[in-house]
Image 1 (cartoon, rainbow, N blue to C red):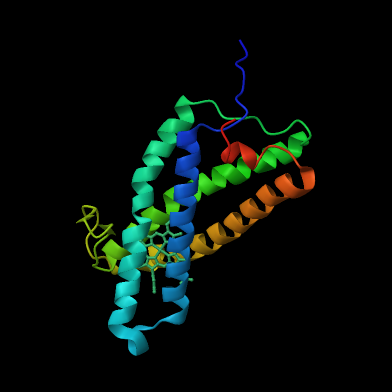
Image 2: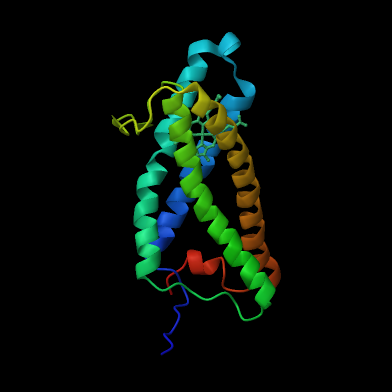
Length: 184
Ligand code: HEM
């Protein structure tokens, strides 16, 4: 049996998408700023506060992602336009899958990074995620570069995602961007 595909994402899916996009980009920029423009030698406790802010914002994504994945599997989503070739559709789906993977991998490696360095993983300055690993220099040597490389990869994916959305809207003039914004 074939089910009718909706023209727009549900309001809940749209809210989750845009709220998570804003949080992700802010967390990314703060992490980038701290990692590349601040050092403990020069900026000391300010760098500490910036990293704390990065963590308090980024950890929220873990909770939103649980809701988002549940919503994704319980609600139908619009189809990609029929003007797209099968290979481009595959490419787009693969890109979306990689974005979800980054939404999982960055918070996980970020938390492992903090815990293995002996620091907490706080959420919105309200509570901490229970530590799943103790201070561990061997693990830190793996998850620290992993978090940094993944954050770069995610940065490229996000830029590609935005460029693709804008191309759909302004060049192909299809419904792709609007399906994440409008409801009728
Ligand atoms: C989607 C979520 C996240 C994104 C997009 C993100 C992004 C980034 C970026 C771009 C950097 C800088 C990389 C560089 O040095 O070039 C970074 C560093 C870092 N992140 Fe994340 N991150 C996320 C989640 C987390 C979480 C949940 C934690 C810990 C609870 C965390 C802890 C750290 C730490 C400790 C650094 C090092 C900062 C420094 O050395 O100054 N990150 N992150």
